[in-house]
Amino acid sequence: MREKISVVVPIYNSEKTIRKLLNRLHLVLYNFNDYEIILIDDCSHDQSYKVIKESNITNTTYIRLSKNVGQQLATFYGLMQTSGDYVIIIDDDLEQNPEDIVKLYSEIKKGFHVVYGIDTKVKQKKLIRSIGSSLRDWLFNRLTNKQKNILVSSFRIMDRQLVNKVLLADCKFIYLSMEILKNTNLVGNVAITYEKNKESNYHLLSLIKIWWMIYLYYGKCNMLKIFRKKLQPFIIEERSIS
Image (cartoon, rainbow, N blue to C red; front, side):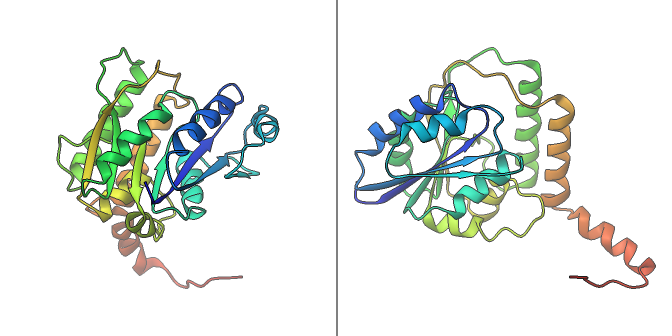
């Protein structure tokens, strides 16, 4: 495994899991020629920073945000810091097993630009998470050209070519999987086993807002441009003030 591997971990209040996650990541990544871990702390309110500092693990960059910007934007900023030939995104809660990185890597070497780790084991999900997943899948099938049997998740690996394209995103609202699917059709899935489902940080209204924003910014009807076009006749003056 000669390529350099970058791992991006968005962190939010993960003091109970981050040390164990880092130790397991390093054991897995030791099999690669070169690697780096980018930790993006999205303004945690617990002792995540202290735990990471005490861990003192090499090949790790820690970036702490002064304001909570949300998982998508925090992860996007993490992608900007990477230099690897392949980039992996994994959650901070150990619901996803770091050991499955090898499966993701093996699958993407078959010619995909991105591979998502999908849990094939049936679990009982909370109602809100179930509604959110169903609505997300419906939106993605409607707004992108991906095959309907292809699923998405937060656990994924991308090649450098795709990462560079994703980083060109110019939307005020960024949703990573939409940026990914906008830039490639070479998408793969690999079966993995998730640990016990965590409690969702999102309420139903929050999820509805996210999916509405996805529709506004990524919808084929390009609704934001339609709104702007309709308002244009009423704009007297428009200029930027620095």
